[in-house]
Structure formats: C-alpha cells, structure tokens
Length: 476
Image 1 (cartoon, rainbow, N blue to C red):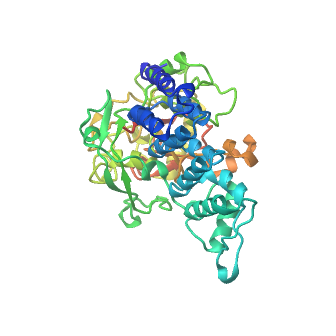
Image 2: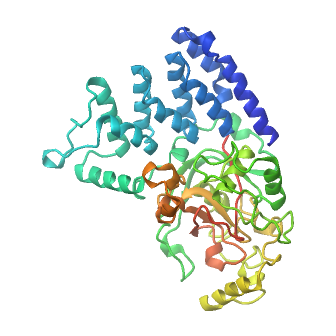
Image 3: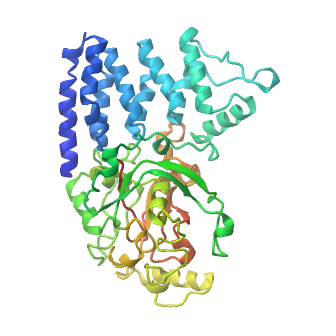
C-alpha cells in the first residue's frame, strides 16, 4: 500500500474518533457543526476512496441527525467522488425529515443520475397531463412536503417538465440504466470546488505536471480535421470549466504497476465497486521481455482504476486528458498541427516502413499476431520527450493508448452494467454503452490520424491488450 494511502486511512480513523458517536450522541446542532467544521478541510482533501468511505460509513450510522445533515455539505463539496454521491443518495432515505429533505434537494441540484433509483420509488415516474404538460401529482404514497421535495428534485434532475421528453428519458433509463448521451452532465467537472490561491500556487507532486484551471475548448470542428479518414461524430467543440489538476508526466510504467501488484491483494479496498469477483490483477504482458521503463500494457480498466486508487490518484476524464495533450494552443498534435513521425512511437516507426493505405496497415497488424510476442512494440516512456505538450506532458501520443474514466457514448463517468440490478449478467456487458471507456492518444500500432490529440477511441473495460495503458491525475 502506498504510504500516502496508509497515511490517509490513518487520518480518516482519527477523524472518526473525533466525531465519536457517543460523545456527540445528544450534542446540539451548533456543537455538531463546529466539530464537523473542525475536520472539514481534512475530509475534503482526502484522495483515498477508502478514507472517504470509512468516514461516510460512520456518518450514515451516527445517532445524531445533525451530524448526518452536516456531512451532506461536505459530500456536496466532494461530489466528484463516487462515495460522496453514494452518501447523498442513500441519505434520501434518512428517517429524520430535515436530513432526508436536504439530501433530496442535493440530488436535484447536482443532477445525480445515481439518485433516480432512490427517488422514483418514493413517488413513481411522472404521468402525462393535458396539453403535453406533466402533472405534478405523481403517483406513490408520500404526501405533503416529502412528496413535493422529491417531485421538485426529479424535475430538476431531468431538466424538463415536457411529458414527451420525460417519457423518452424514462424509457431510456429503464432500458439502459442511464440517460441518453445528449443528456450531457458531468458532475465531476461541473461541481468540483473552485481553485483557491493556495491550489494555484502549489508545487506539483513528483513526476506530475500542473494543468491550470479555467475554461477550455475541447473537440474540433470537422472543417479543421486534416485527415480524410476520420470519424468526427463525437468531436463537436464545446467549452468546459475545469479546476486546476495535476497529471502524470509519463504513462504508468511496468515497474510502477508491478510494484502495485506485489503490494495488494487481487481484490482489495482499492478495487472498483463493480469489479468482477476473482479478478486477476497481474498484467498479461508479465512474461514478455518488456523494459521496466516501458508503459504498462496488458491490463484492463479495472486494473487502471485500482492502481490509481492505490496511488492516491484518479484516472483523468477525457476532457482533462485532451486539455493536457493539446495545451493552451489547442494543437491537433501535442507539438503542433502537423504530424511529425519522429516525435512519437507509431506504426510507421514500429514496423520501419511507409504506410500509405489502410490495407497495408491492416496487413502489418495481422503480421504481429502471427509473429507472437514482440518486445519491440513499446518504447520507454521518455523516448520521445521532444513530443511533449505545451504543458510539458510527455508520451501522450503513440506508444500506448491511455484509459480515461469517461464513457464513449454518454461522455459521463464509466458506469458498467454490473452496477445496475436489472443488468447484472456479464453477458450483457458488451451491449452496454457505459462499459466502453474512452481511450486516447493512439499507440505503436496506429496511423497518424489515430494518434492525434483529438481522436476518440474506445474499448470494452474488461479487455486486456498490449496497446493500452494509462496515466493518472490528482485534483487538489
């Protein structure tokens, strides 16, 4: 276990002791609020999912409702974290009205799709009224303030009161377990707490690069794409607001990943909540002659998630990845708008040949399968430092694709079907759009357009390939 994680878990235990249920059992609202405020900065700054999970678990079972209520404010501040969102959603069922009502309000304000399964059973789905307007007299038993709170939160969450639109959202959610892709809402990007001067001036952690917060444009207009062979279906330019974050200067290496595997159990506290049982963490390239300083490959999304959690970090959303790769100038490649074959490791220098057509490229890739393991496919992560982005991030293009935590179709956080009660079978995984994380940057096997900083790839989150790796971020 990384020392930083051990430290944070120890800190979380100290926080829990400070909020001792017995000492605060009958405490006044003012005393509870003062106690929570005393630990607020410590809780908000926790990077470890395990640390936050421990604290929310204590809060959920705390006998003083004022503490359960106060912790909702902290969960709102850390809504980028899945355990924070889970705490808000579960607290909608608190048996004390003022606690439950605040949680219900936050579900609407923060547009937490995770809350639908908590809120809809209380009042039911909307039912159409005259004039294509939805009646606010929804079904369900609750009456009075409780019913009104849930109805208002659901309308706010859905973003509409139009009955046709609501019926479409209902049908899509019941089938897929999420809203359709055009319902774009990214809580982790839209609701991260604003940067303070302290965060802006903080030195980046070792081997990480600081990306300043602000408004960035991601995506690219189809008229600006310099390639004939390019799928621009999901590249509509849009502005996103991000807080300052730090991103690994290099992809995670074989040596770094192997150290993680040696330090943890196969299924541990760092695992994704929906990770399949009996997960094997060892990379499938373990027995290939790949250098310790090469980017790790032969791992899946769950492995990348667990490593990031163990290291006290996270996987980047694709918007964060693209911002770090394109820089303030929004270059098509990290170094500029023109492809430079010597600044990255791509199919042309992997196979040491000119590639002019798709059939030629396909033939080369087929030959790699016939040849078997080949230790020259990847190169050290610092082999192409001259291809760094304007921010100084290295090896973002070529060498290996990199996982992000964004789903390809919805652009929201990857949310595999294992989490959805009606879609629990692994056989359904390949049919679920939420199970395909976006991969970025291209690899040693790709042609120029696929190695641009604007190209979006995808892969099933349980697949393991010798072309896909990852790097991590920290959001202060």
